[in-house]
Each structure stands twice: as C-alpha cells, then as structure tokens.
Image (cartoon, rainbow, N blue to C red):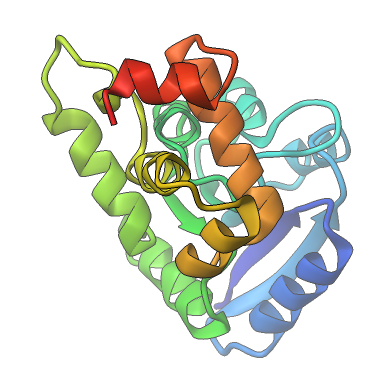
Length: 205
C-alpha cells in the first residue's frame, strides 16, 4: 500500500513540482495540496502519512502549524522543505516536531530519497542543514559574536568586509541577490547593529 503525501506550499510552481515527484513514484500516493497552513487545517480530518511543509507561509508559519497540530496527527510525519537555511528556523522546526529538513534547492531525486527515508523512519536533512544542526549543538554555551551567525552568514559578511557588492557576493556564493540581502539583514539583527561598518567592527573583520 502506498504512503499518502500532502503538500503545504504557497509557491504554486514548486507545489506542482513536488506533486509531480510524488505522482511519479511507486512508493507514494498524492493526497492533497494546500496554499497555507490555515487551509491545511483540513488535514486534521484525513491526516496523510507524510506532509511536506514549507516554513514561510501566508498567515501561520509551517513551523507553528507543526507545533500546534503534531500531537493531533501523531501518525503524520512532517518533512520541512524550505529556502531558509538559518539556525533559528531549522532548530525551531525540528523542536516543534518536524522529522526532517531539506532545502528547496534539492533535486527531484533528493526530495524523493528524503520521502523514502521518512517512510523508513529516518530523519532526512540536506547536507548543509545537517552541518548547521551539528554546529548548533557543538558550539560553546558562551558564544562570541561570530558564533551567533550561521556559516553562510559569516561567508556573506566576510565578503562584504572585503568590499564586494551584493551582486558579486551572490555570484561567488551561487546565491540570488535577494538571498544575500536576507543574510545581511539577519547578520545586522543578530549582532544588534545598523550597518556594515558596525557589523565589521563588532566581528573584528
């Protein structure tokens, strides 16, 4: 008997891509798709075996949905598939009950393999996410400023300190310019600074 899979994702093209992966596999049966966590409340009446959950959704976040409804759907495994790769989002989702965390940059084959791993009782994670989780639990209790930042955030701010522009950083790290800006905003927020100079001074770069 095939395992049922539902999708909670507001990006329609990516939603359709996930649906195609599920429908093209022998192990899984596509159940339903939802554009928001609020729409996914319907899932409580007919819980799937696996729910692929985005984090950043309109209204309630995917992470909050998992926290609120995990106990009401004990037989559903929640696999987060998100573009967010910062420690806070990853750890929060896992603490709230997600069984795994993969990034949207994963290939169709990697996503299918992650679903199969969930089916076997595993906890799939993209390599970068797994590294962040390990680093999170290995870092010292008393952290310096740099330790507050994810590895990717440190890479971005170091290149910024060297005088590179956003587009140049994006090209070097194979990211979009918007993603670079997001990382820089996160750096400023975590360090409690207002600009590049303050961040560089605080990190002593």
